[in-house]
Length: 144
Image (cartoon, rainbow, N blue to C red; front, side, top):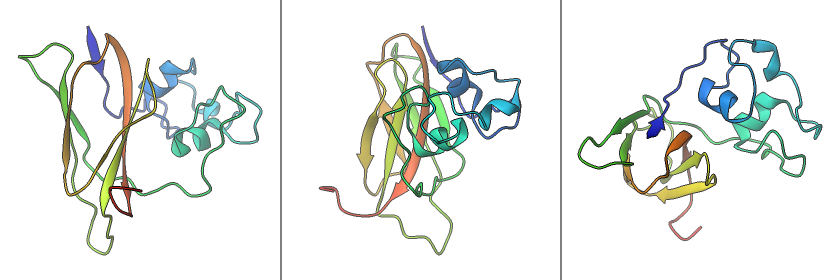
């Protein structure tokens, strides 16, 4: 069974429930956002925002996180087991990303795809489990 959890933040701490569950935090306790689970000097919220593992003291968030587009949506493909479509809205006027980086965290983790000139991505072949996804606007070229 594949579970894709969209942004739900029960305790309002800025970290989605699925991410908190993935790392063993309490989705009903907002105080865990300010904690530093791996003692690396960055709070759990900073680790989430930076896309790093909050339990690995050797990973550090980048000084400034890129912008995230709005209205992220994950829709399962009913005809294919283990696949779904991610879609999002372009950033508002005044921002000029050249593409989007899709980050999928779960059993395999890591950056999934760098997409240019697209507002969606079809994902397939995932193992059963729960995944957290993030989409960041980025600048540069496809070769960066």
